Image: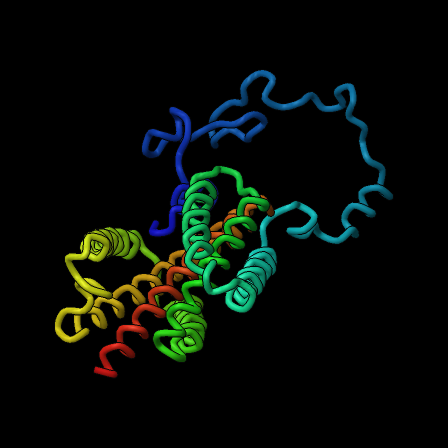
Length: 303
């Protein structure tokens, strides 16, 4: 998987065999009180004795009441639903926007650089912590959202000051890419297969290597404002930016597939926090890539 939030999860990842019996191809794992395979005699003690102590037969009225009662819903069984993921993702996005807007409007210009650095480092640390936690922590996920909101508010103000209007365009672009990715997934036009995820993983590793080298060249002063993205009059930056947006869109589709499998598998309701966090990570990455791409286009369009 591309998103570590989903790929490292036992509940969102591909089904895994456990135990010696499950490890053998074609083997059949056995569990307590499970019906034996056809033709296999039951083992002693596998079934409870009829009429054993502690068991009472139900009368006709109790049986009738049981059959007339409504079926248990996912809320009753404490299983994750799509609504859980939507509500939590929407809440985190609302918090992100509020913090970003507050940073944009309330933080003094002299403090904006410090807020950006603190937000970046805090979001990076909490992002790694949340990504590698087996059980999601709502408090840590909310804290991650606050730090990322401060970072996005500060960097968005900086970009909008240099390239007027790019922030609104990036927001609209993020919404559009999300909607198109969801449509492609729901319609079945793009299917998540092992080959698809393997291709995405290698492509993202290559892009991460390019970004790391480019960042080092920019920090050391070897290259200018956008580094290697400035080559070819900005053409390299535009091509690389479009590829990055495509990778983020593909990552969204993989995230949707992971959530779908989690709901169908009946994972615990608390995992909706992990699903919402995973979507937040991908959406923030997509927004930043669009923001940089639009800034490159605006910069070289003026030259």
